Length: 185
Image (cartoon, rainbow, N blue to C red; front, side, top):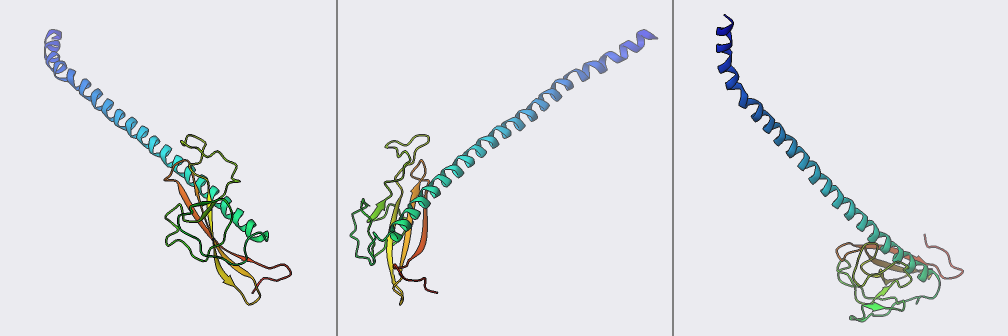
């Protein structure tokens, strides 16, 4: 009886031998797909983090230029009224106040913009890691005066991160009170 039992079990074993190989290959395929998707996800997250960093660098550079313009206006060294700024004078080294403004502040650099040269970070001729693409700039537009003599100015500032595509533009309205004056309510 034992001989008969072994003869009937042999064909069943032969039929099941390839099933382990197919199952193993399917499991290997599933694990490979999961691993590849994890690596791809990691690469996308790395790009997102780099873009967020560049955006923050651009915003910080623009805010620095904006604050510099506000200090310049409140120092008394700035003109109390504006003049017409000529197109084509893109990078002025001396502060100026304009009555005319660029048609589109999102198209940088602007005509007659003032560069924030005291920005003490590395500006690269050929951008590399840890550098800024361009010196931040600001544009001051004279909006008018109040009955109390306070001057109103619009300050637009642009800053770049490490690439020309990482640019940020910020804007503020600033009131300058003449010495001995008070804020309008």
